[in-house]
Picture 1 (tube, rainbow, N blue to C red):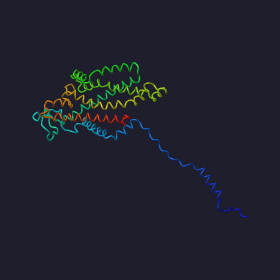
Picture 2: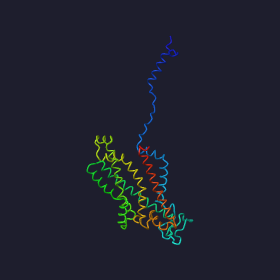
Picture 3: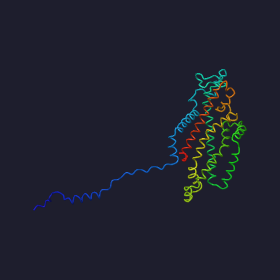
Picture 4: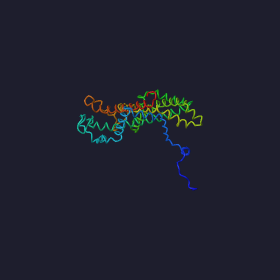
Length: 323
C-alpha cells in the first residue's frame, strides 16, 4: 500500500473553518475619520460676515486709495505744491485746464496737487488720534472695570470732569494756546486725544463689567489665575470688540474735527496743507471761483463717509444681535 497522500477535494467543513479563521485573524478595515471642524470664534465669524458685505468692500477700497494717496502722493500728481515756483498769481482762480485738472486757487497754485497732498495731514491726524484714544481709554477702562473699588471710582470721576468740557471749545482753547509751540500738526492730535479718550474709557469699562461676571472668568479665578492674567487673557479679548467699532467710527469724526479746527485757523498752519485749511483759504472767493473749495470739501466728505461706513459694517459684524 503506497504512503503517498491522496489529493482530493477539500471538504466543505474544512473550507468553512479556514475562511472563518482568516476572517478572525485579518484586522478590520481602518476607517479614515474626518477631522473635527474648528470651533468658530467671534472674529472668524465677523470676518466671514464682513467679506460678504458690499458696504465693507466699498469702504475698504476707498480707504485703501486714500491711504496710498496719503503716503505716495507723487503717484497721482507730478506737481509739488510746496514749491513756490509752481504757483503763478497771473493764473489765480482759473478753471480746469490741461495739466491742472481742478484748476488753480487764489494764489495760482494747482488745486489738484494740493488736494492730493492735503490728504496726508488729515488722515495722519485722524489715525493717530484714534490710536491714542483707543489705547489710553481702553487700558484705563480695562483696569477700572477689572479692579473696581477705589480705582474705578477715581477714574470714573476724572472721566466725568473731561466730559464736562465742551469738545469744540476745549480743542479751540488748547490749539490756540499752543499753536506757536512748534508742534505742528501734533498739537491737533494732542487736543483731540485729551478730549476724546473718556468715551472709549466708558465703553471699555462697561464691556469689562459685563464680562467680569461670566462663567469663564469665574472658572479662571477658581483655577488660580492671577488678576493680570484674567485681565489680559480673558477680559480683554472678550471686551475689545465695542472699542474697535467705536474707534473706527470716531476716526472719520476726528478727520472732520481737524478740518474744522484748520478752518477756524487754529489747526494745521501754512505752509502745511490740509483740506480744512484749503476750504478756509477759498471761502472768501467762493462765488467767483468755487472749485478750490468744492474739491477739498468733496474729498473730505468722501473720507469721512468711508470710515463711517467701515465702522457701521464692523459694528454689524461684531454685534450678534444685529445679524
